[in-house]
Image 1 (cartoon, helix red, strand yellow):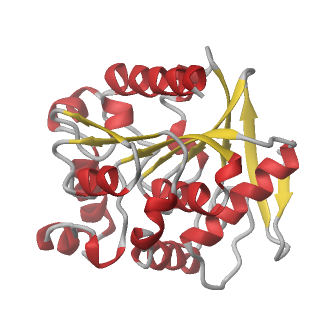
Image 2: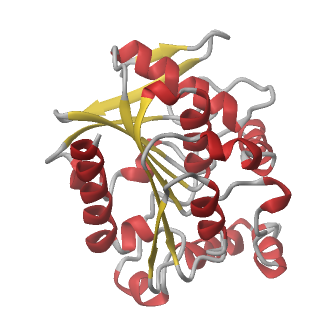
Length: 263
């Protein structure tokens, strides 16, 4: 598996697949590239997909030092440089959407079109998850946390026919220090002041029933980014891209195609 080396010497594992225009797929907090396994092939008719393991996950290095969403964005740039990719479409979900925001803000010449899924601007302007959700995720019983997370990701009807395992519930190989650094990095994200600087065509996607990252964050993001388009998927929870892939994947593909022809 190829690795890119960052400016601080950290090795970031990445997994290019397919042919076509490059599309970077960024996974959520404490997850590796397998987050995208269920839907990655949906983009191979038009794109070469590029996934990576955030530092602290998968086959990437796991330094015991503070992480940040801006730092994760720099790791993505290292991967693009290693691949010789000058410009790419970027689709980030959950914490990956936070990382994607910084990519488009700090490196506008590297992002051709941007899709922000089930994510948040962070900081004091963001809408926090409800208290009962925070309590459920902080439970001491790992099995209880797993059940709560599955319920936040997917609807009961979908879980009844898709018992798992689910690749969106966290990387089980992560050391405790890396899991902590991911949590802090995601919690400290605040791109609010810089979001109006985004120039890439932007699509904001969110499920209407998302309580893990409340749906109210989607219109905040869309209003803050010039010209952004907002699409809500009725009935979807946090993992809208997987459970509602029949809606979500064509929506993203069509947006990227139109963004390419209009620019």
